Length: 105
Image 1 (spheres, rainbow, N blue to C red):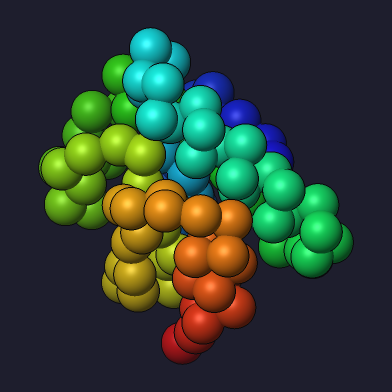
Image 2 (cartoon, one colour):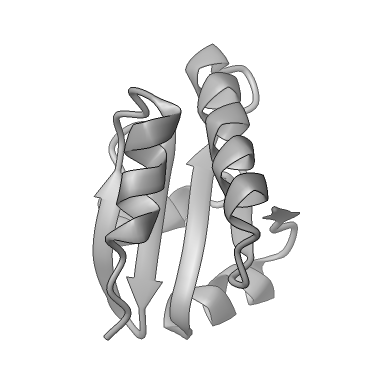
């Protein structure tokens, strides 16, 4: 996973084909658990696609643009269209199923 630290990168990813973005806030304990689950899945799958992490405190306009109302949130983006967002990180299996079902248009 790779942290997004500048606005130019997030804008580029929002327009790119096949981006996977994990949104969090640093004091959210649920976000920390979700990030651990996501890390387990990405390591086990040896994913070719990089999962980018984004602290929404630095980019509040992204939450509004993508309709993210809570964190943690895992969003799969294709072009300028948001395909899907996972808000409920119920288990590692659920995260894995979400990533397996991704469809990049």
